Image 1: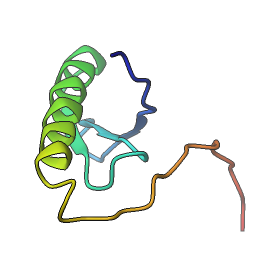
Image 2: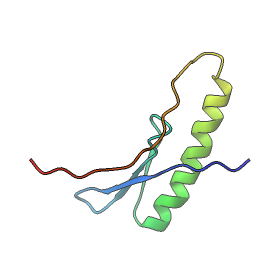
Image 3: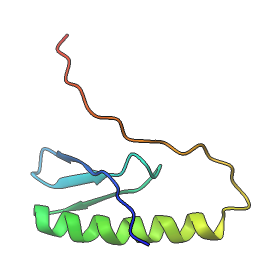
Length: 74
């Protein structure tokens, strides 16, 4: 079964890319390049899904649905 996830990508002060998956709380990784980040985030998603499957009876977390991003200036 193929599932689709969204990846929020940021870059820190050392130019390292950081990827976060909003649909999977705590699913975060990094990479020196975008290609490395996407490889790492795929692995992180698979691990997060494995952990959730193993703990599905222990947790009753609400499913989040990614809606989008907005930019605001203050």
